[in-house]
Length: 117
Image (cartoon, rainbow, N blue to C red; front, top):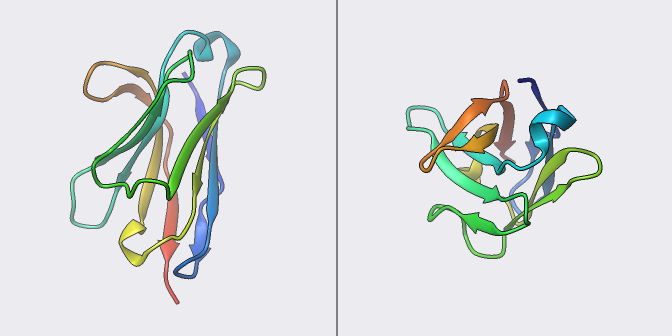
């Protein structure tokens, strides 16, 4: 299973970034996809998840309304729109696929998001 992430980078506080993760079509169908993140010195934490039927859920650490997860089943991609970014959003963001109940079974390589002035 190969997941390819893009869209990370450096952004100022209050700015926006959009992360995108692509998967092979055969793997994409029928499975939930989503994002976790890991900040330096902290455990990996759940950010957001979206099912094949477009049902979404967000982690407790994510402020309501700042992050939006979506997926394009035709393109086999999942995206995370992040707005009003804060310094505490700085982390490596990992795309995952195939929800096990607590986490994802397969992961991408991660993409760095740094929020700093």
